[in-house]
Image (cartoon, rainbow, N blue to C red):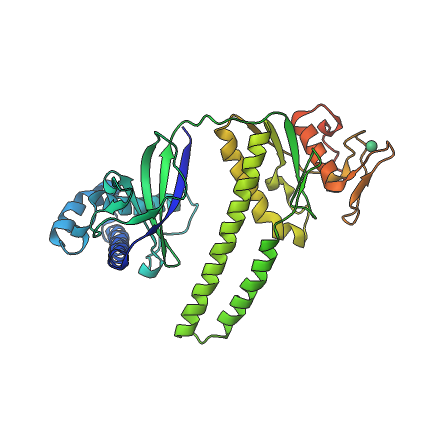
Length: 372
Ligand SMILES: [Zn+2]
């Protein structure tokens, strides 16, 4: 079953946020202690500790420390041990580096099982074991009705608190009809085979200018100074805002695609390589992969098909007659001897659609001699 997550802002009062900070500090301490224990066990005795070894000691640790670890939810503490275990597992899979000790200023999340350590009260506030009272939540959207809540992850981001619920449920959403091919364009962010072009939102550029200004301000501050801390915070808040806006945009765009079409084809960005080895690519890159990713997961619950196609030569082929026509990046309009006159990116979108779903000339994989 697909898993979905819902993120909500929570507004702890002063006492509550102090308690939350203390909780994360304790969790971080436990994390580091577990890591230390594993390292020492290996160095001294050549023993590799497992989750179960450490979990069996947890109960005693809590009884010994009633004003510290003893205050917090048992299952949430277990999750901390699991986290250590996961970073180890990731290391042995050689995907990540060796687990590092964490600074408590950089330890920002705690995982709870909903109903155990974290509860949603009748007044729709959240109760957390060890935190006084119940915390206000900004329920800005409805979660799926009847869905079973799995975990609730509490996070601190630039001084704001959030909770992310993961929900497991079958989704039956209406999907659209018809097929569409989508080209990741240079002038426009995307162009579809239906002739629709979507511009890159302007906020990105504007916000980036402001970010550069904040970056320079930060660079001017003396190391270790209070001003520097503040400047750093402003920079982080700015980055978070840009990321939010971009995510919001990608959600809306992918939602509109899934609502309108039954089959959607994209260029496979992993294969694109240096196709557009230029600035435009780097600006759009993050936005593109997010759009693909969001469309894929939304399609999963709407019975929509998403297909990725080889992007090579999409902008060099005529969608009407299949002739390969080399164009430099400057040429914005596709003009062909067969009489086709199309926007360059729209023509590429049509090729993407033909390659994915056919029939049409785009089915032919262009030969390697075509410069991508
Ligand atoms: Zn043609």
